[in-house]
Length: 270
Ligand SMILES: [Zn+2]
Ligand SMILES: [Zn+2]
Picture 1 (cartoon, rainbow, N blue to C red):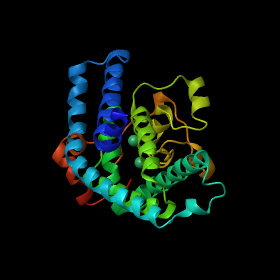
Picture 2 (picture 1 turned 180 degrees about the vertical axis):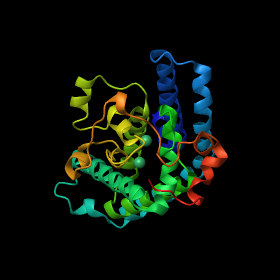
Picture 3 (picture 1 turned 90 degrees about the vertical axis):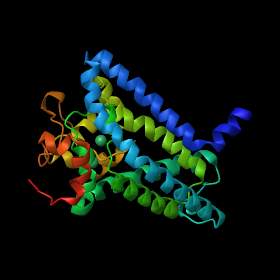
Picture 4 (picture 1 turned 135 degrees about the horizontal axis):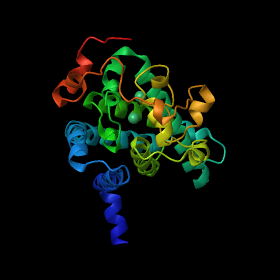
């Protein structure tokens, strides 16, 4: 009981520790299974890890606001979930909200690609030339702000309790980190898992440096939205080149302070 109440009260710390454990375990697995030289790999990782310093204060501050919105909507029985048949059944409630929130994340991701002002922030994530687990944290603090603001909107529209958000965050953390790992699934397994979930193989396509692939596989945890809305694509490992065609020079995409400036520069389109 004591352990349970500690976990409930310290969700921020628990989620951060869980995130750190998964990313470290997968990072070490990448070194072992791909025969990478750890010191070389660390040089690349170091730049991405710096984004934790800039994003974390924004993330923690904004999440408190998301939780406040969740408390308000539940107090006022607000949100689409209240109109769903059988929503009082916990299985229906949690599963439907998980799926609906995943659809919201899909919409958010499409929006980040389609509006130049937002794309300039999101392209920071795409500008990594060597995608691995550390790419997961490569997010401009401006995008962290936009992402969590949208999260407030989704919570306001759907009406989930805080436990749904905790459950989603737990699954999402694992899914997002796994999607960036260099350890791709064997093709046969990818065919099955990828029917429903975003796999590393599918997310790597999204990190290909050229359109139309960059505008495919927007899914967060589930791949069903890409299949449904015609944005699903597959690309073999040999043909996948990471990065964005407008930001291939190392001075633009490998120096932390230069990367932070990207959203405030004129956008080149190829
Ligand atoms: Zn993207
Ligand atoms: Zn990514």
